Length: 237
Length: 381
Image (cartoon, rainbow over all chains, first blue to last red; front, side, top):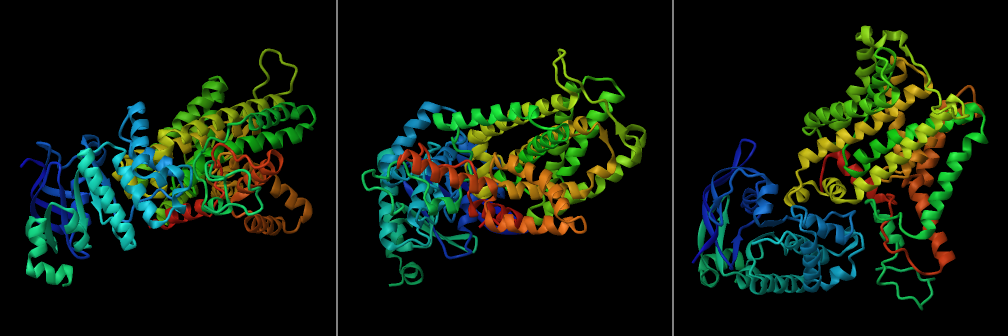
């Protein structure tokens, strides 16, 4: 098993307060890894730590290279795309402009155009509305747009921050189906943080459980599904 | 997508995504490709011709007034880029106008440098000062940035008085009005008119090209969602300072032209009131629009004069009332209203064919206001 991303002793800070307390985890290449946790566990911070948006200590290796301390733009260029919490739609820009911003770190115009067509095939609704104001899209469409925008940087690793948040179950199912497709047919490695443990453990291969900034359990997703204490506190049955 | 019910059924409206009320309300805040289409080009050409012929139909004072409109428009363009497109606030752009004006005054009178170079130098110096001011301003958001820039505006007249060996203190500096070159049979005022108009056209073109490209998208992304912009790899600190610099450059160039047009600079012309006036013009014209700068320029040039004509006793009351009426009738600025009228006209004349892109150049928009309000409150949602 080859790890595409590997963190050890990862700590993150907001000002003086430490939010992550020495995490060790790995994201296997070609797989979907999920990090489960309640509100305030540090899930969003963990993703921001990887993409260079918060101050960290410890080491983060991506494809063998140490990337801790890199600026966000350098991390994007190396192939990590971050789909931020709450979708991060550029509401006053068009859908197409949003997608172009996803390819902001790239300069290869022709390939960008190709990728635009590719994400339109993946999300036909976005093509239909490509010239619309992104702010008028529904929540589900905006989440699709956020994922599509992430793909526009042609990432090797896609970071998804609670994509299910505020979406109807049927939309979540559809979204996760596409995420699986991105993973399987395009070979994009995915690191997902989620509260919706049921759906996420269905989707993922590997799972970690984060509680107040520390990893408490980890293992293959199906194993965590069987785990009694997790079932009780996160799956509710 | 909501479409107008009155539209003929024949034309399926899905494809072109027309500007519908809902879309418009949210606001098209990017510099979309409005300059497309033969009709638009024709209209622009007609406006340009009228503008170039105007001085022959006007008195010299009226010519001066229109010169002033163009100069303000250049200044407001800078402010619109900063506030409307990048979501950063400034209550201190009068200071950059002053820097541009004084640079020109000092260079042309003391160092005998041709005014053309002085204008360029004024722009570059403002760019530099704006960029440097933009660096610490990164630490301020919203209202705090507004106050920090306001401090700059408050300080400027006194700073100018303090360095009196350069600036001439309270007396100011009298400039030579540049005459027309190549023995053109026009007066000096007419020449300044053409100079300002030309600079305005260049400024508009540059702004349009800046905003519709990759850099423009980054600038607007920062306004709409700074965290997501950063996640896309936009270096928001650099862009914000650069935008501040570019914005100051526009206003500085306007200041340079203003100094030449008035042929006089004095510290008290550049009080904090000038900065507030700029903000008024910017908002009334349409803050996230390019053309709004021209409307705004006309507003701050003409409305005070008319207010004076209506009531000598209380012109500012009249000005205030006019301002409130404008805000009430045109919440998205004059440019927003103009855009709406153009769209309606186009629909009724050309029939249903919507524009190739529904993106309006103007902030037809609660979105503009919302985006800016968010910026002012310093709270990304």
